[in-house]
Image (cartoon, rainbow, N blue to C red; front, side):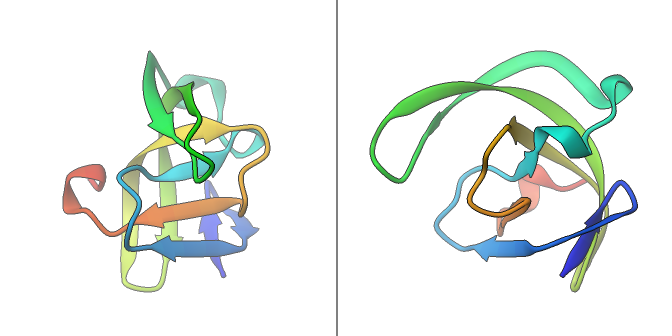
Length: 87
């Protein structure tokens, strides 16, 4: 469990992920960065997703994280274990 912008969510830590992901509906409009990033999904398909910064509160991390916004992610938040996505 964790929180994205104060909303309780199910969170998944992914040691293989190169990007953090949050469900689009959890992101406020002013948090959108106005840019996009390509992401290869588990099935090998590459798609483009909007980028945002969101307030994250999960065990072992509390603060802002850069994330890709997906309408239907596997979990409401997928947290990569790479420091460059945090802060």
